[in-house]
Image 1 (spheres, rainbow, N blue to C red):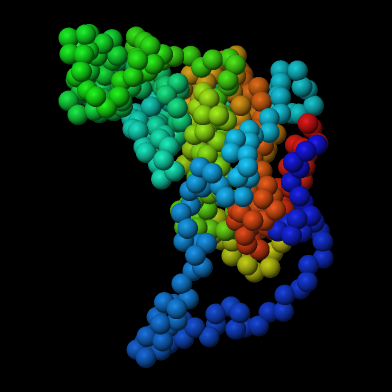
Image 2: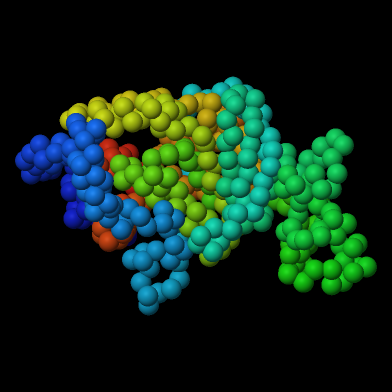
Length: 396
Ligand SMILES: [Zn+2]
């Protein structure tokens, strides 16, 4: 089996290996910071501020959270071709060894309220979709790469709306440009016939006009299944540079794979569920971090985070995928290291069909520790996932 993660790489010591016990001194924990006990004292406060200024976070923490399109160390300069992700064929209709996860009997009803084109810092574009649903009040998101994947509920006609209303909520085909008057391609084509050079920015190319001819969304082809990732919001890992988990890196990697036409020609979608800390909320998650710092082993502390899989959330993800035209037998490729997720995402009536599972190998493993998150905490965090991860690899 080629390209297995090097579990014995320097960045990731073997499981249960004895680690040299770090000798702790109170000084290591910042107890000498006078700002804690003498905040009223102007001179020591100033001293503390000076210390903070001089102890800026290392550059790695300040680097952009987004992975550049070509991650240094991922590809060798002599081979500029992107390496396709490892795929594992899946057919849950035949397998009986894995118990079917607890799922809602009926899928939630979802509706895409609005979408917009978002140019990203990597130079690629994505389409951000905001969804509402009938089971919670959160705005769950779909981050869509490519122009083949369209929301049915967004495109649906709404009573009494104008063409400007449609374009404002993102229910248009092709691209917007100053002065555009219609959301639909057919009307634009009529205008184009009258005014062949109405716009020169390539905003409505012949290919987009033909592939999305009419006002219905195009179906995704069988041969190139789109990539899909179900991702739960992680404020700490995605926004404030936390190295306690690899959520930010996984989100970046999913975006990198989906935005690369060579790897994912038919695009992809990240279903971004607003369920911080697997649904327990940021406050409870921070308490679990404190328990870890108090010396609980990773597993014990993770029990707080590892609540049972939320059937409602998976139902939402399934409904959103169906709305995006990714349901049915044409199938998807699911980016996950968690085999249990496959059946959960497929839904109670197999509304979505996962035909391949694609591994998300941590960057540090792929690159022998040259790239990816480096911290004592993330090593512990990832080591709790290794057993499951190995299980997935041995199924190949
Ligand atoms: Zn996280």
